[in-house]
Length: 250
Image (cartoon, rainbow, N blue to C red):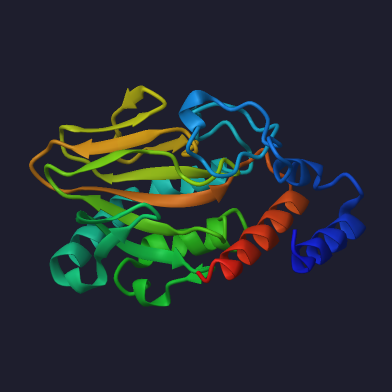
């Protein structure tokens, strides 16, 4: 660990107790993530002690239930504003840049990125922006290392099987506009989105998606802290990943 990480960890232990970030420290040891599911093999970081469950019930966690309920209640207005933005403000969308690739047939409109809200998006999709700010950002449920965006998969497009970087955040999808013929597979289990409802899954497991429909498929994606992580762990993980990114020149 660098001196910067050591100092950050020491401050967190001083505030929260000697064992408060023991799982994070264990993760950094050789093999410290412990055993992992074979379909998590390509994830870079595995925080030990989190449920090895690909799919989660979106309403099962008291921390996340208000987010799910607010998003689902807002979906009709969110869909209307999204479709207007797609028609009239296409310049607000961009090719999605995953850490592995860039796809022209996968478009994104960002609401949260780089550790903060994307204020330019408030005018295009005000309902989604307001709900995200009130229920996710202001409550610190969003993982600030990641993002929230409208994910639009064009007809015929697919997202190749891949694992995301770690298991300590979790991916929430609000199904905004879903044509027939769309599916998502996580750890070999395939599901379809139900418009107006949320899906929640651990994207450290291998996952893929496709749109075999005749019009774009759009979900609102939100990267949330995994509800089984603690506040001091979240602080330590932000310090750790921020420093790693700095050292990598990101």
